[in-house]
Amino acid sequence: MSLVSAHYQVIMQIIRLLIQGIDWVNEKVGRLTAWLTVIMVLNVFFVVLLRYVFGVGWVWMQELYVWSHATAFMAGAGYTFLHNGHVRIDLIYRAASPRYKAIVDILGGIFLALPLLIILYLRGLPIFIRSWEVSEKSAEAGGLPALYLLKLLILVFCILLGIQVLAQVLRNILLLLGMKTPPTPEDRETGSVVDGV
Image (cartoon, rainbow, N blue to C red; front, side, top):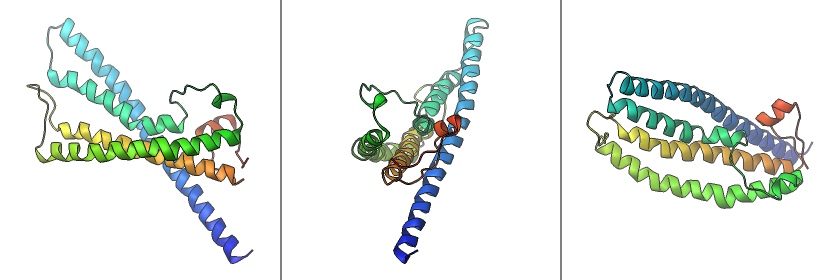
């Protein structure tokens, strides 16, 4: 094995480990977020019960389920993308070859998703910083403090979804190069191993 070939193999292994690491992070965050939805449902149940049965209500409890929903959506976006759960409007993609899908996913990731997420991050960062600097809290009396935590979710969304898009781009590049790719959750469910196309 030549020195160039050895370096190439090391780089490919690093890319595979990076993909696996990103998948692991979003898998763990997504599973944690799934439990948050259970808490959110219980919170909504108690808000309704307290309000309509006992005639009592607290603004912070109502805001809590809005915050929980935002957290589930924003923090769970990378997990959803990892599991191919985002809505697609595709007439051609579904029946296309793995090579075509890989090319579309690479181009879509590089020219659509990543630039949009970078712009959203850059626009969201000053919003979060301003909120943090003034210790922004809910505008409602009795609402939740630390509104900046809710605004931080914009940045978390961009990072988690962005790294998952990067993992998908890298996975598809490996696929096009004819290399073995790390298994996706879909591959693990079906027991298939994806080699290059």
